[in-house]
Image (cartoon, rainbow, N blue to C red):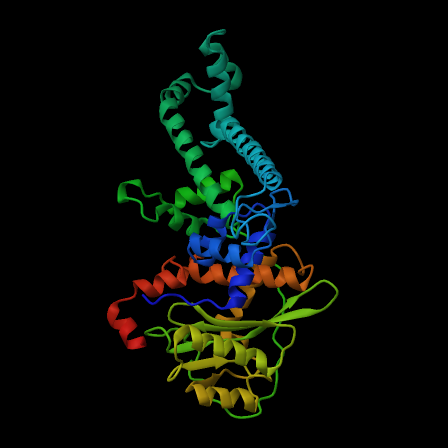
Amino acid sequence: MARKSFTDEFRRQAVDLYESTPGATVRGIADDLGIARGTLRDWLTIHGTGNKTAADGSSCPSPVQPMRTTPGSGLGGEEPPRQKIARLEARVRELEISEKKLTAEREILQRAAKYFAGGDALVTRFQFVADHRHTFEVKRLCELVHVSRSSFYAWLAAAPVRARRAAGDAVLVARIQTIHDGDNTIGAPRATTELNDGVAAADRVNHKRVARVMRAAGIAGYRRRRRVHTTIVEQPRQTVPDLLRRDFTAPAPNQVYVGDITYLPLAGGTNLYLATVIDCCSRKLAGWALADHMRTDLVNDALHAAERARGSLRGAVFHSDHGAVYTSSAYAELCDRLGVTRSMGAVGSSADNALAESFNATVKREVLQDNTCWPDAATCRRQVFRWLTRYNTRRRHSYCQHLSPNTYEQALPATVTATAA
């Protein structure tokens, strides 16, 4: 595999993401962005400020210090004592917060474990008899709570089975919670895939059990029910055929792409705009651009980014709606220069570009969640940059057999990837 090449802007955005995310670790940010930890540490040494955001939101010294020349010490000299003490104190505070969180979660799970197997009225009555059977006669207790003795003894005999099931569910819910803490948009299908990833067949967990445990524990993937209409219909300036006909598939990567522009609302009534280029074969985000305008340069930048990522787009089809930027002469000239064949759906029909529309909705749903807008442009750029990078490297996609787009492309047969090349 060819060595990855990162732009200087990407490196600085990665450093800014690490330093501004509360409680972030080098390992966590590196995994999200799909890069090696050593690479991110090198970037922090070159571009870092020497500070980061602690878990409680306060500023603290970063464990990875930038290379600077200070009076009385050489380049990369020993850390000053005062700075070292401040860094260690910040680390202690982070560990204390983490310990309190883990202790609270463990206590909650221990207290709730016995209810995982059920909690209806009949079980409550059986439990009452079991708790008091050494003090009172079982026959009398059963008569008072209106249960038969045979049913009670059958329930009592099955207690070891229920206990093992409850213990297993408690372990499972802890594993699910860990996955959900990393990405709170994950529901039962993706959680099941994460749990079974790389696990032997005998240890795999059934998706129905995962759904039941998640319901009982109150864990659910994020659902945004409010619908927002973002498409503005533009009359076409020239005739471009619809080559996809709502068939958003492709036999190999780098053959068919879809794209769109969506707005990202900011506090104060302004917007940023995101243009995308998505591969129909693997759902990989091959290129994207983010700006405070919706001019033709925005979609051209996204197409250029896809060309850099793929090496060449010659012979590929790019499908879009009839927005003004996609019907402009500058965009048409760029497609001709890159060897890209244009395709457009019908005017006013969002279903003709459903894949791109769905991607736009997913970005806003999973990043904004219950918020209506981003507080400022810097926060919006930072959060969207992280999600878009993580989308290709780590986020599992149902179309890709619950693999990330990058992993899915790597798993394609050699004949398919050779055809794409």
